[in-house]
Image (cartoon, rainbow over all chains, first blue to last red; front, top):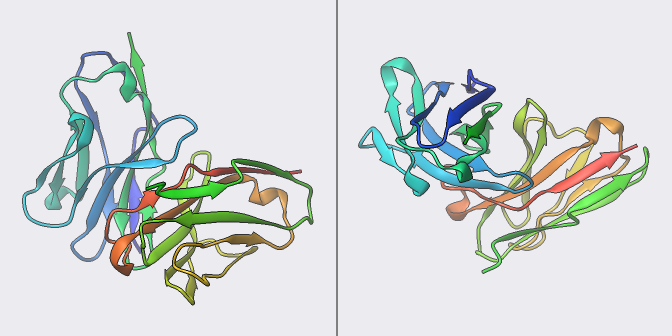
Length: 111
Length: 114
């Protein structure tokens, strides 16, 4: 069965610092991978997705993620975070009936 | 385009009451789904539909019913609410009848069952 692990429940980063959020997946075939962001009280917004091809994918708001098949990872990165990036981040793997989500990483931005 | 809309935003029920959470999308998407979000659990799939007249169960379907009479609407019914159904519910839709495409999420309904 598919599963997604986000090892970090909370991460605190200073404004302007770089960010990496970790995601590991378990999936038998080539995975369809997604990162979503949820601002407080809001729905989820897609940041980026990986289906095939270039393993480094660019998303919105300056985010990127790298697919590493050998490590079963799809980590999200941003070179310089802004206070507005404070939110909950979810990694997900697609399957025929829906998405399997990780439990999320809560990002806190320190001034 | 309004995208995916959900009503109500908030609801409080007593144990045993019934209610319907509404979801509508104006993007002509074939695929629609319902998720529940609980603290520390991420989102879990309740039911989904790949087109009008076609529905199926997800990971956590017990206590919920769905129907899909039109492409636009996908209501979620709680027949006899239980405290374990206290959660935030999200509706989502995707094009081309597949969840492998980007899913667009509604703003959510926060449900409390007393």
